[in-house]
Length: 372
Ligand code: SF4
Ligand code: SF4
Ligand code: SF4
Image (cartoon, rainbow, N blue to C red):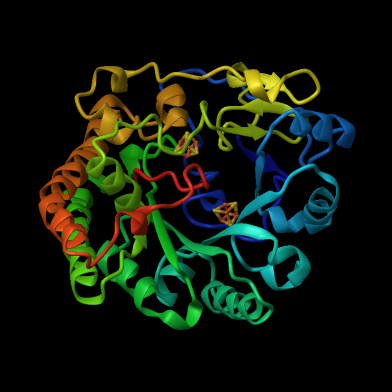
C-alpha cells in the first residue's frame, strides 16, 4: 500500500496556485466540508503507533508530503531510520533538497520535484530564484549519487504553454528529470468565476496536448524510447492492454494519507476533512482500510474506465460548478481520443521491435495523479 505522510503544514514558498490563492479564493465548494482546525501543524503521532501500523503491511511505501516536507527533515531522517519500510518517496518543492544528505536522498525510490517548466514560468508562480535553486539542488543530489526516478511535477495554469513547458523539461538534459508529470490547476478551490479557464483550455491546452502526443510518438519513432510523460504513459499502457482503471492517483483504494495526528484520509489534500477520514494508525489495520468510491457524475461517465474519475477530492468538495467541471472533462475526453488514435502507430513500433511494451512500465500510485 502507498501512504502519503503529512509532515508539516509549513512551507517556505507561496506559490500563486497554492498559498498565494488562500486569501482570494478559499476552497468554497458546492458541499459543506467540516475542517478540523485542531489538527497539529507538524507530524506528532506516537512513533510506536506508526511502526505497529506499518508492520502489518507487507510492502508499505511512504511518500513524504507537506506543506513542504523538508521543512521537517529531522522527521524525514527519523522515520527513514526507524519505520519498518523499505520504500520511500517525497513530493518536494526542491529548494531544500541539497540539505537532506545523500544517505537519505539516495534511499528515495522516487523524487517528485515541483517545477512548472522554463525559468520565467516557474519563477512567476513559485517565486523569483526558485527555478535556479531547484536546478542547482538537482545537480547536487545527482553529484551525490542519486539514481532513483526523478519526476518533474508541473502545475499547469492559463499562463502555461503546455507543449513548450514539457518540451523544455524533456530537452534540458542537464537537470536530469527522467520523468514528467503535469496537473492542471482546476476544480481545486472556489475560483472558477475568477478564471479564463475555458477559453485557454480549448484554444491553448487541448491543441498543445495533441501536438505533444505527436512529439511523444516522434521520439519513439526516431530515438526508440518512450518518454516518461506520465499523463500519456499510464493511460496508453492501459489502452494497449485494454484495461480500465480506478482512480489513477490511487486515493481511497491504493493510496492513503496519514495526517499529522495519525488519522487516515483517502487523499493528501483532505487535510482536516474529518468527515472523509477512514481510520487512525492507532486502531486501523492497513490490510482492511475501506475503499472510498466516487459518488458524483463520474459514476455515469462513459469514459470512467479511461479517466478513473480524475479526483476524489473534487468529487467530494465540488469546488467548481458542474458546467465548469464539464470543461475539464472535455480535455480528458480529448486526451483519450488522441491517445486512442495513436495506438495503431504505437502497436506498429512495438511489433517492429523499435520500442517494447516494458518501456511503458512504471510504479502506479507514486504521487502522479495521471489525469491532468
Ligand atoms: S511549494 Fe507546494 S506547498 Fe508550498 S506553496 Fe508551493 S505548491 Fe504550496
Ligand atoms: S471525464 Fe469527467 S465525468 Fe468522466 S470520469 Fe473523468 S472526471 Fe468523471
Ligand atoms: S487527484 Fe485528487 S484525489 Fe488524487 S491525490 Fe490529487 S487531490 Fe487527491
